[in-house]
Length: 126
Image 1: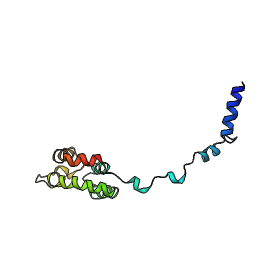
Image 2: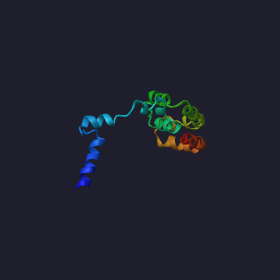
Image 3: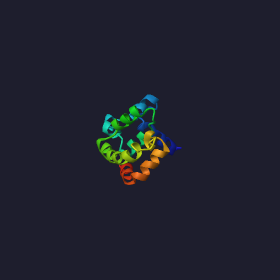
Image 4: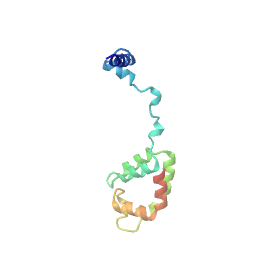
């Protein structure tokens, strides 16, 4: 019984003698210096490519620029190499419908994977 009383006393002392929710809420508040900086929220190249893959033919003109604007400068540079590789084969091909006319299509993904494997690997790694 004495051990139980000692544990209970220590627990209450650790809480400052109060167990009200408002006291606990203040104790658990994150200090301001733990907030993420805006540059930590920028997309890497792999995430940028994933974002663009979510774009469709109907929203490409707004979706792709939004993805690019959310990416870090380093990601944009690495993605530029992937884009430069994929553009001739997958976007500007002589086919009636280029594979990447719709960036979310399986044909587009296959075209990029086939023609730009090393650039895609580098992008996904960053």
